[in-house]
Length: 313
Ligand SMILES: Nc1nc2c(ncn2[C@@H]2O[C@H](COP(=O)(O)OP(=O)(O)OP(=O)(O)O)[C@@H](O)[C@H]2O)c(=O)[nH]1
Image (cartoon, helix red, strand yellow):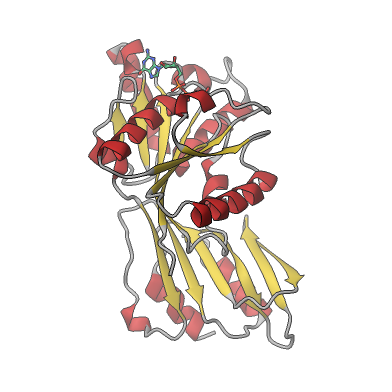
């Protein structure tokens, strides 16, 4: 089996300090004797930051933020990287300042990619000096506020950067606003020029469990309650009743943020690709000999409960 490559995702609004912290992380990876690869996603057709990382294995995703087409590109590029560069030990991904990190998680948990990578953490950078302004209804747009919120709520570590540029009073105000938004148990650290203890930066905060329907349900108990996100991959599922499946997905709405994968329904030999988002199930027939596979992404997913309810369906 191919080794799974650990991945760190850096997110944060324009100018928040992503590149600054990326350089620190790169340095740390290299001095610890490991070989890093970078994936940079830039708006526009030219990557202006490329020159900063001359000697690294680098993947560029140009022309847009990480949305549907970029997700496909990302899958292809990760595949290429893993096949051609077996020496790579860790992959660092910097999304554009206006990317929603959930889209990157989405690409990395695609059924064809999930076994090749191991998301470690989503590091969210906040520009403390401009946060209040970006949050203000009078000084910013709804789009900016929504983007910031998505970046903050999807992060598994929050780095409140540029604290040299604001006074104590403002800092307290920013902190209390972030406390409300950020996920439970997501550490918040303050920094100047992305100076964060590397142990904290590299700590794993995102977990993916792989389960098989033939496993004993009593064995499933790898719940990581202290982590904001986790992905679960379930294989070995036999044909299932479509209505029951939909009901099952909807029944998990407390903890399930997203589901996708391949599945076969009773009464048809056809394989379907399915997407479950915003509490809606979409299925598309596909021609493939792939086995069924369900990927669940959520907060506080309970393996045991999920498997037991699937068994009894
Ligand atoms: N004063 C101050 N400046 C900082 C700090 N961190 C980064 N900067 C500066 O802010 C600018 C933007 O930093 P980057 O690391 O390029 O930010 P980015 O998030 O990659 O920016 P985009 O690529 O536009 O999304 C640079 O000039 C940095 O030197 C900080 O803590 N304090």
